[in-house]
Length: 247
Image (cartoon, rainbow, N blue to C red; front, top):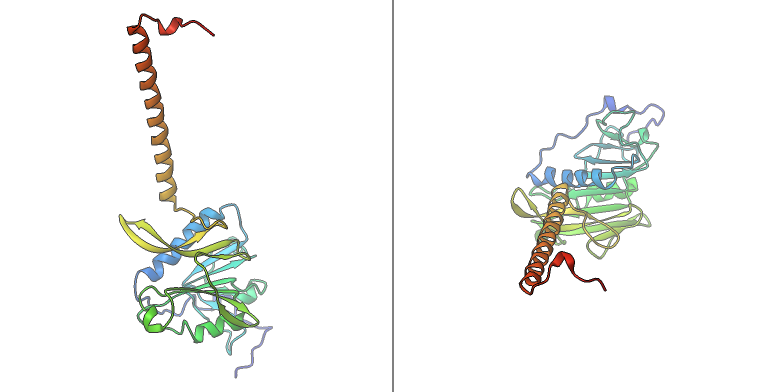
């Protein structure tokens, strides 16, 4: 086993930003980025979090600090949004005041990469509290469920129940939802609030605002027509609607 010199660890400028493993399908990149974009809106006023997508996470709990683990996505809380005002090339735990990701997401593809074994053990040893595995296509052959959340308890991951699953330490829930994307209904991962309501995308929020505006216009138009009909009726009965007796 390689002896780790904790006093002379490499900087992120000296380390690769990923392991250059190509993704098997576009969802491996798309869905984590959708979570990132949503989180930027949900936590727009917070500057103490970082969400990495397909980024190398370097740590000292393995045999070699130069060998990273590369999750499809991860969330850390209690770190700078921009480290030193700049974008990160990779995430080295020793450069982040030893803050490990609180949640990691792995998406199982056609080519398994140890999501239920090797990687799970790495994350447990690292101390990642929540481990989320999304396996929409190959879950049956893996003898798992399409969506699973594990919580680190006593150094081991325990499968949790419920979806969306609320993570109190994060202040968010995570789960699946059917969402319109590129004019097609698609299953996506999403964030949820404590009530179990899904946080909407920017497009959905804009559509809701348009719908509310249209509803208000329709209500105002219906009220105007009713008023005009009432005035017409009063005139037909010989009353001036502008000179009605007061109570």
